[in-house]
Amino acid sequence: MTFWDTIYNKYPTKLHPTTEEVKTLPIALFNWFVANDQGERVRFAQLYDNCIWNIKPEQLWVYFQSNLPVERENILGLIPYIHQVTEFDFYTGEAKYNNKDVCWAPGL
Image 1: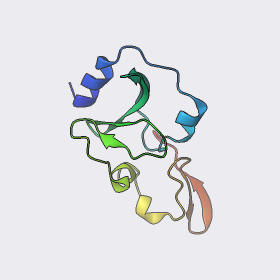
Image 2 (image 1 turned 90 degrees about the vertical axis):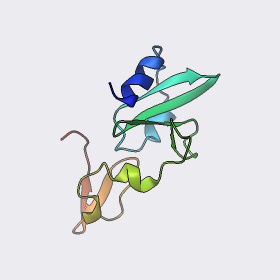
Image 3 (image 1 turned 120 degrees about the horizontal axis):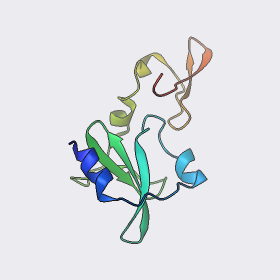
């Protein structure tokens, strides 16, 4: 069992995400959930086998085990060929490749 699985199972009640929570989730994080922790709505997401969390969209994501901030590059590392595109939108996956509009779709 990965650390992510441990945290996922720790919060059996998953909350329905708000539109804002969905719109402000980095496109590369597709394993995630919202739970109530100590009276706060917290977004938890899988980053490799780790768990990261975030309360407010404008705040940084933080590693669950260490409470250290997650570097944006660590999340972008989940996206193949990211170095070949420009104008990448962290939340929608839209970018430019050879001056053409492209959109990254996770899982394809």
